[in-house]
Every structure is written in C-alpha cells, then in structure tokens.
Image (cartoon, rainbow, N blue to C red; front, side, top):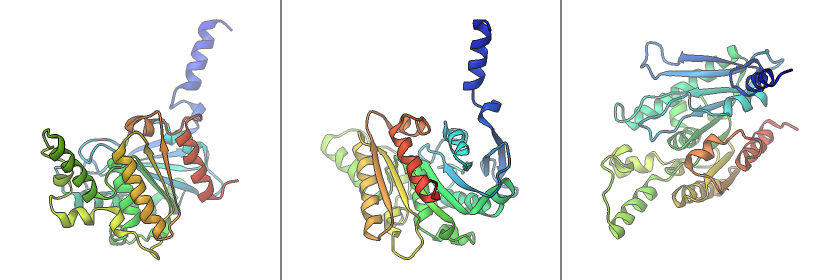
Length: 293
C-alpha cells in the first residue's frame, strides 16, 4: 500500500462521523411542540440496537447562559456511546431574551421530554445522568437538587442516577457575587453591567433560590455527584468544595476532583481523552453508578 493510501485510511479512522465510531446522530429534535427555535436537542445512539435499554447522559452546554450550543460536546458523545450510553445534548433559550426562571424551566422540559421519549431511541428513562459545563454545570446541579422544576413536568428525581457538573462557579450565587464585589472594592476596576447579580434577577432572594446549595436535603432522592473543576481557578475550586460540603452534610454521595495543568475550556474539551485524569475519574464514577465491572 502506498503512503498516500495509508494516510487516507488513517484519516478515516480518526475522523468523527465515520463508520469507525459506530454512532448515529439525530439532530434538532423539538422538545416543545411549536416552541422556540432553541427548544431542540440532539440524540447520539449506537448504530446497532442494544439488547437492553441503555443509560442516558443528558448534557447542558455552557456559555454564561447567554451563548452556547448543543453541538459543542467534544469527544463526549463518541466515548459515552462506546461505553454503552445514549448521549443527549440540549439547547435552551438564552439571557437576556428570557428570565433565568424560564431558562431553567426549558432545561426541565427538555429532560422531561427525554424521560418520556428516550425509550424509542433505545434509552432507559429511569437511568438518566445529568451533566453540564460552566453555566450548564449550575443548571445541571440545580435540576438534580431542586426538585420543583422536574416535579412541574411530572418527573421525579428518582430517575436521575448521577450528576456531573464541570467547572461551575455558581452553586452558591451569593458567595460568588460577594467575592466579585469585594475584589472590586479592594482593587478597583469596572464591574460587569450584566454580571451574576443581574443575570440571576438582581434580587437577593432569587440569588439564594437559584443556588443549588440552598436546596440540598436528605430524603429527596438527590443523585450521587461527581464535581469536576480546574484547580487553578480559585472561584470554581471554592464553589466545588462548597457544593461538595453541603452534599456530604446530607449524606449524599459526592466526589470532588480538581484537575491541574488545564483551564476552564480544556477541562471540558478534554473529557474523553484516554490519558486525561478527569476523564478517568468521570469513567470510574459512571462505572460505579451503572455497576459496570
């Protein structure tokens, strides 16, 4: 075989979307009938049908609640489908077009649609994992802890088997606001005109209510957590530890892992690389929860 043919073959092996990856993508499925253009989700499934229903990873993109898209999932669909999961990535409406209340309820409606319909795609509606990066981490943690949003959609926290928030800084919103404003008071500089205080409603009661830590309690069927964060960021490190402490106080299984030699974006983008330590923790967590040997 000449070198050109070898190069083409190698490229086909490495490129996503080829038969080598044995996965199928169904795009832009509406989760609200006649809804907004962003009321859509993508489902990644194995090419071959499984013998039994597969666990589901429901993923929420980042982007500061103002930007982002369900297509920004990196390696996660490929590696999770390979490990016997269905992967779902959802969009939601964005600030400032909608309020935070409406945005969170978009995510709850999307997850409720998955619970009702994922069996048609080979998924197990009673074995759903929720994950997200950055702003998606806040949404994932809140949906898995504050059961009001799913209850509105007729879904119980019992169907959630694990939560994986990645490098969020808003599990305790009053603390992140106080940190930013105290830093500005000490060192000066311009405050954001549409920062966390405004995004979450500019009302102290809303800041508390939208904080996942507020709603942690025993007996709510809150699923086990794996909290991933970049250890070089003091804000996400502090928030990860804060959420972890509150979960531990209520006897909810939680593991906290800080990755060094990374950054906010790479921590998420590298999930799926075999030599990535955060990926290894991610897989171990999922294996424990699915009882995979």
